[in-house]
Length: 535
Ligand SMILES: [Zn+2]
Image (tube, rainbow, N blue to C red; front, side):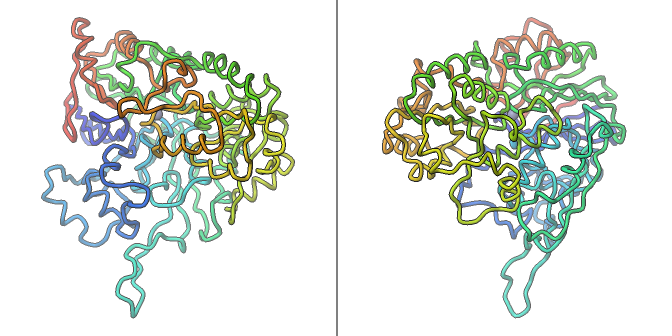
């Protein structure tokens, strides 16, 4: 008997944490950050206490109470005593691994709390992206997906407990075991290996060393697995198929049929169909949508607007969506401008190029430059990057002096640079960003509009408040393509694969599948929060 338990991703977009059990074998399908529940209690300046380790996320219901699954260094003595009466409490002795579908935090984020001995299975690009995002991002327990700094109990003598668990800057970082599903680690060249194995690009000097772990492959898993690449708004996304005693079980991750790499999703459908799956766990983010915007539409709409711009162009999109970045790079080339990306985006591109030679080389691409912000302090990785690409660095005054030559890749959180640039009349702000649920931080649109008004910048494709809801005006749509398939495409995918059982996750409208697939002979079973389904 195969049992699936849904610890996240039910009636919410993201936070997927699905436990698959077949006899003694156990796997998790993703282990994502639960944005929806997190935001009920927390915001930027109110977050779980780092010094409390696992206590806060467990007590607030952000993590399921599964003893044995999480990092021992985050467990205070007696932690589990207060959760043993919880109806969802369980002791999980052995978990074979986590099948990670892609590097968006709502799928990967809470791997940071999971025991380091549990391997993560992913594509090579996803593995490398988790490292690059961590190297160049914020530090903190919730960011420790690729590697983590074990905490230490810290009770200074003579003081009454300043902190409980100190964030471990005195101990070496431990890299997690990543096993690649799409390529063999042997094919990686020395540069790629060096990136993976070294803590050289770590954020700070405070870390005392880096214990790297070589990349593995699927053979180390007791389950028979298939890693099936799909198209989504971040490269390296995949679906997974697991062979169980009840037959094949397919998990879609996030996917779409209208992106540049739709061929991958088509191939996934073919492969999944051939497995005659017993069950398909599928996302349902955009069930209400009937049509899609394509990347070509964005190019067409974007170039039309940007060609007319009299001065600076600011483009707001997720640079982790490399297809979008390439679209704006092409627009920059075709309008005689340069695309100015931030150091963290350059770091990601440089990392992706280790695995994909079609990613542009920042050093030799005449249309790409790096915008270095005005900072008081720079992390080591930024200093290294700025040194490496010295000739490609531009500062606020460079952009300010030649505004018509640039497309600046800024988001809301970079607008404090504007006093140094002083945008001239005719500047525009093109909003081409992902849906709010994909955002790692919630954008304050009211403030964004205030900034643009103050600097007389024209906003394009920006949500405006209509009856209390932020919506993009009909006439300015077509500057963003979703990472998720529309309802019509989701039904096509489900019907083509034709599983015996279909379980919708990552959706606020899971009943959509039941309503539309009733006649097709597919049994749609809706999961419940922390509930189990036997297949
Ligand atoms: Zn995603």
